[in-house]
Length: 139
Image 1 (cartoon, helix red, strand yellow):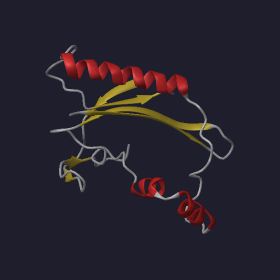
Image 2: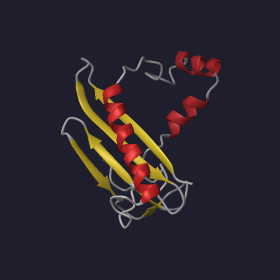
Image 3: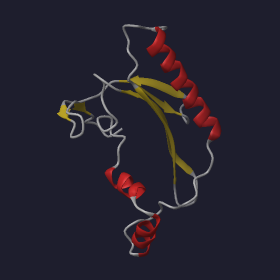
Image 4: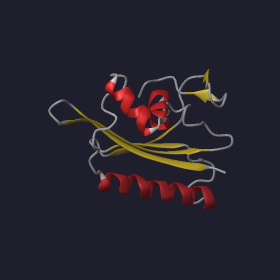
């Protein structure tokens, strides 16, 4: 069963100015690259999320974790945009509307540039998670 993974991110500098942004829609499942192939899994972040509240606080005090507990601002308009694109990809998957021969893999958004691209994977390294081809560039 395919899974549709959605995400948005904004990077800010020390003064709070936006210095980078991105959105994504990734379709994962059988015969498709996994989130690790695309470079969307962060082992350190996954470890932090799996900590108990007590262990989390202990590691923050010890200096092992920085910035993970900072409040995240709402980016609702951008999340809504990406969610709509995710629904469109679901329609493509279910009905083959807008291209049965062009299976959806990943959409990459730049909110600053106002662009969206349909991506394929670059490179031929093997993924440590699923064994498929994994991403080689550092987009």
